[in-house]
Length: 225
Image (cartoon, rainbow, N blue to C red; front, top):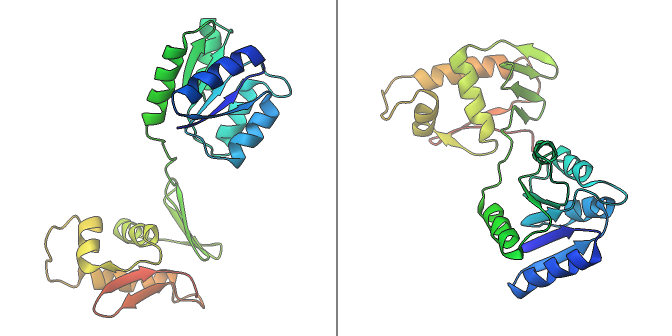
């Protein structure tokens, strides 16, 4: 496991670093929040252990900046700031755990291991884009080259499925399962009809076709090559 320790107290930093290294982990130590933020964005770590009271940039501000930049590395605050409101503030700033000094290294190691096992949550994508075609999943809005396109619900679902698989061919079976929730082929022209309607709306009024038929295979959406 690779751990980043952001701690300005040299005695504490040395104690924690030695404990992690004896357990077979790599532990990089940074003594201020500004350099800690830079290190965390330049390198990949399994867990970050950070004090709250840091020179140059406080621990809360450092973690908020990491989260704003899309960095989801688990963070545990290791600090002497012990009030309930302080703990809540630490967690609300983007921290995943909070351990108050003085502490037992065995507890810190156990908490770090638990954080490292936790799956990193990736924010759900709310906008899809292929070339100049954009789909807004929140507002249920489709535009191409800035021009709004009106789609029926099933057309929207079909376009979303194709755009999520940008560049890959989706077969009839795949589209029937994902868009119509069919576990069998009804042997109708439902897919061809919807593809034709979709192409008329997102391709025909524009110079560059994005929706492609792959003969005897299926369909794909892709930008110009």
